[in-house]
Length: 436
Ligand SMILES: Cc1ncc(COP(=O)(O)O)c(C=O)c1O
Image (cartoon, rainbow, N blue to C red):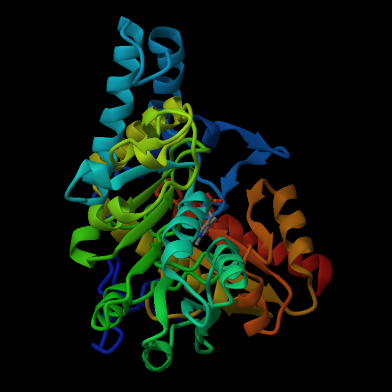
């Protein structure tokens, strides 16, 4: 029987023994969540796809949106729409207040100490680019090193690669084992006096591995190296406390936490953000402009050039409020159970090989099938109304590490159920019927 460590939250110990659990085939404990009610909050889940009930298992790509998010965005355009920060009229004041309340909600969600540390960006990708271009370009020089891991999304590889090329610095990569777990001893060896920043994913989008980021941060801080955490796949699944982690930067995307697309967050420690130059320039990020000299706005506005994604921030606020009401600890516990069940029943299908079998996982079940291309798996599942993602998941080095070109990936959200997993299993058997 396949087991997962019982660790819905970041236990973050790569050394401590973990308790394993074994689920009976018909068990998925909802942990106090009313999942039926939750499903009703997401209008899209009521639709059919290809004549079948929609089974949406592509949440690592983007999650569906609750009515609360959809409604707040309509209401904003019906009642409040105006540009923010610069207006003296009532609508501008209302929109500004709603936008800045959203920033407060993000601060609370991450348990950041100061609202000045919350920068709105387009998503995790832009957050990482901001740090690479602003912090990186000022701090990384010829011969220096940037340390990432072998399980990063392209968004946490390419910005550093571009920086290293420009600065004649070196990109160093911490390897992973066959289960898809970070090799901490290798990390320790690679961390050195030339390391200028560590950038690591909290949860791998291709493997589901939860990284021991707290330990990574402690090790890096021991030699004064700052750490950026790519939280794109963590923020939707368990509570994140940037002060407890003591990370220097934390990035996540709104659309993966049930919010709108085009809005995301960079958390950065105020002292670091203060010292960093602007990333983009234009309106709103300035204090004063003359042709001779420009002085910059205070945090976080220094990093928010131009009209922001106002309705995106307001929608994100609604999404975070929705998650808070559910309780992130309950969400984590329920999704853990669901993933453990899915792992067990999918792994039992003949010819299926799971890619990513770390002891600590969240949200993601990647697999390949003997003799079947993942795209064919995805197509046949889609005919049954089941949405999974197939391909390299913007993590080509992970595919290379496992000697494959692609996987099929089922990824879970709080509205998924045991019935969804059972539909997936039935769908995979159908794939077998067609191809094997
Ligand atoms: C781990 C990880 N990092 C970064 C990203 C990039 O997120 P976005 O495309 O929302 O900027 C993703 C998206 O899938 C991801 O899974």
